[in-house]
Every structure is written in C-alpha cells, then in structure tokens.
Length: 136
Image (cartoon, rainbow, N blue to C red; front, side, top):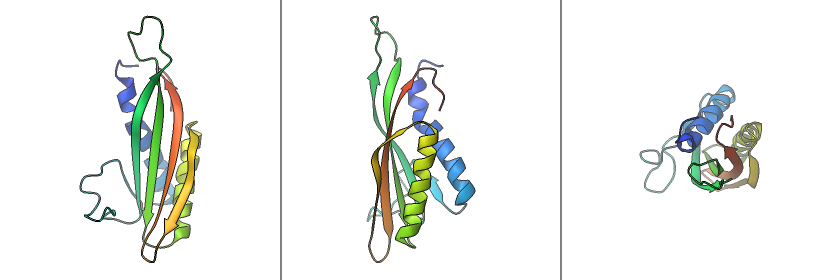
C-alpha cells in the first residue's frame, strides 16, 4: 500500500456504502461533503440524505523505529435525514449499519433516531482498527 494509505479510508468506505445503499434506495442522496449540501438551518438540501464522515483517526500499532504508520483507529460517523417517516430513517440507518458491519467495523454508537413533525434524523458511529495492507 502507499505511504499515505490512511488518507484514503473515508473515500473507500464511502464508495462501498454508497454503492450498496443505492441498490436498495436509488433515490438516496449520499455525500461526504458538508459544503453546499446543507442549508442555513443545518438541514440537507435533498431528502433523504446520507452523510458519511471520518472523524480524526488515531495512530496505533507503532513499532520501535516509528518511521511509518502501521495502523490507525478509524471512526466513521453516518448521519441520515428523511422528510417522510421515522421508520424510513430507521430503515436507512440500519442498512448503513449492516454495510459497516460487512467491513468489520464495530458499532460504538448504536442507531439513534429522532423526529419532529417535518423530518427524521439519525446517527451511528462505527470504529475499526485498520492496518497498512488491510482490505475493507
């Protein structure tokens, strides 16, 4: 793998999650970008939306030379918003959770869904140690 392999984690995870989610929800807007995606109220411009973000990774598995990054602890957070029902939001976020489990992520924040009279939103947080050379 390249020296900067750890900078490609979010892209690889997003590609896999988006591909599988679009099979079941072809109308789902998937993004990793927060600019131009959300309005001034912090709500997405399109519904339903899945927003995937990698939180700051932490290095682990250092060797005695400490000259390369051998492994990282990667935390991925997924947000979902719908303008239909809380059930649809729960279904989408549960399917996203299953995709993360297929990539061997641990769920450290189980699906949490809330709703008001206009939108439903949910979030999950997933974590995994990824070593240089691991496949997702």
